[in-house]
Structures are given as C-alpha cells and as structure tokens.
Length: 77
Image (cartoon, rainbow, N blue to C red):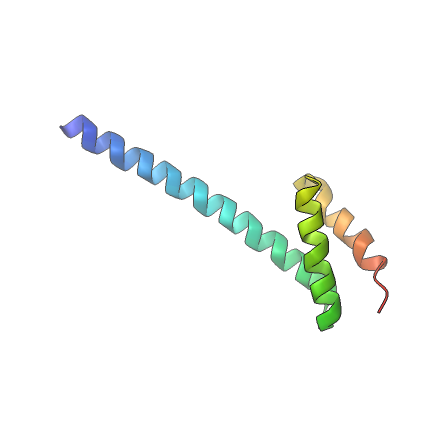
C-alpha cells in the first residue's frame, strides 16, 4: 500500500508540473504577442489571431518571436 501511495502522488505531481509548464508557456507566448501590439486594441486582436495561426502552423518557440515581429510589421490599421 505504501508503494501505491508513493506512485500515485509521484504521478500526480509530475502531471501537475507538466500541466503548469505548458500553461506558463502559453501565458508567455500570449504576453509576447500582446507586447508587440502596444495599446492598440485592434492590433492586439490581430496579434492574438496571428498567435493562434502560429500554433496551427506549429511554429517552433525559437522562431516564434521573429515570426510575430514580422506579422506585427505587416499589420495595417
């Protein structure tokens, strides 16, 4: 029974840390997109749409900042 308790708590802890890691990555990407938009509400919405497109296209995290910068430069009000 002791091994079962240790196993369950270990698996639950690993799952929670994985979930938290992925959640924090999404928050950081979201904040990155919004920081490039400034205070313009229309551009903020545009950048969040671009972020969703980047996720759909599976843009790697290393390339995400440069990709978002290009998309921000292409924005026309």
